[in-house]
Image (cartoon, rainbow, N blue to C red):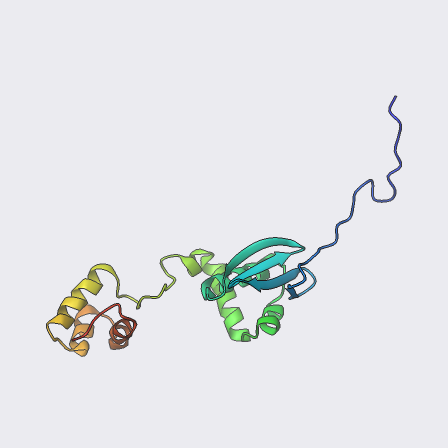
Length: 161
C-alpha cells in the first residue's frame, strides 16, 4: 500500500513568484522591460515573451497594443511608462483591434519607402525624372502626391537630375 503524503494547504504545489532580471524596469506588477545590446526585451511574470530592436517602432506599437488587449497592462501604464501620448496609444490599439498583426507588419505598414511609390510605379517615375519632367506633372500623371516623390528623392529611393 502507498503511504499518503501530507502536502499542506497548497496540495504539493510550489508557488513561484515572478522574478525579473535586475536590469528590468517594471511597467506594472506583471510586466517588465529591459534593454540590452539595442534589443528591447519584454518579460511577463518573469518569463521573456517578446523582443525587438530598439528602433523598431512598429514592433513596439504592436506588442504594447497586444499587452493591453490581453489585459497584461492598461493603456495608462503604457502612456506613463514609455511617455507616449494617450492619442497614439488609443490609435495603435484601435489599429490592433481592426487589423491585428497585419496592420503593423503587413503590406499596409510602411517600411521605409514612400507611400504608393514601389515596384513598377517607382521605375516609371524614375524614367520620367531622368527625362527632366517636373515632379508636379509626374505626380498628377501617376496619381501620387508631389511630397511622396520628393520624400522618395530625399531618402534616395528615386534620383532627380
